[in-house]
Length: 396
Image: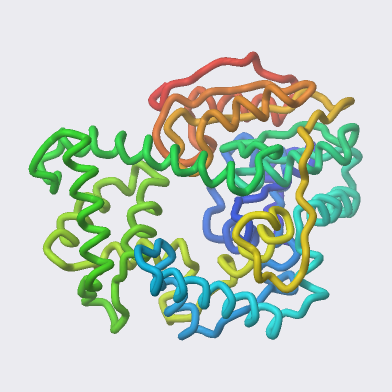
């Protein structure tokens, strides 16, 4: 755990989860101490943590550095029987390495249900009678599971970039495919207005066709990379584009990256992919993608985990959290990773869900700024009085 002390008269602690699963909350808070607004920093100790299996909390470990380099470049969208067999071999190799380097005892106990119970232990250790919590992305799933277990131990809870806990892993994957398509189209429409847009034909259909051609080109022969010796495969190109869609502030760099990629240079896309994969400047990796796989295979064993060394148990019911105070659910209309429809679904199933709509691009809404939505969230966290459901535009 890590804590930033309140700068003024403290009213309690606010616990954060930055998402993933697999992202180190300790590293994230140390890297961005401005993620919470000045008004929140004044009144709360800001606390974040590494869930079990993540970062400094008995981290799941699988492949070594060279193995991870090869795994992240592997073709997981096979077009032939040979490519499908190779993909299967990589899935098996990854699972076996996790068992060998982490052990079944750890792997069977990294699920979200146990992490939610850990969070209640944290609440008590912080001296809080009730939890004040803000979770982004996967942190909304963790928060929802906590609410299901301990609805009366919540003071205020914000679930930003919400997942729908009642979805299967396959259903969530299909939702994300829709979300990234919507986000890509929004990026393209913005790109067409820019002088440096690398697409010659300014229609969404033509640009999407050119992107698919880029992926196929990288599948046939990796793009060159002027950064180091790694090859920029189709998997790396797809990951790089995906990551750049998470924040509108990255769109100028995505335009530059695609312009270079169309000329055969995948260096910038590789750097984007490295961020997502947790690759550090020295070439080593955090364990965020290994932990992601481990948590997902416990939470969603039916999805892409046929060779995992332990069996998980899928959480199948809707989250009601009966007896809880109002829980604020935030959805961004063109969120690539957690589409807006999921926030609507979670808010509807909660017994006291309040939906706030962020009419904007990018993944999640609260980033410590002065927007109308962030002001509403700050007021709610400080007073525990729920805002009215409604929408804010990106610039409001």
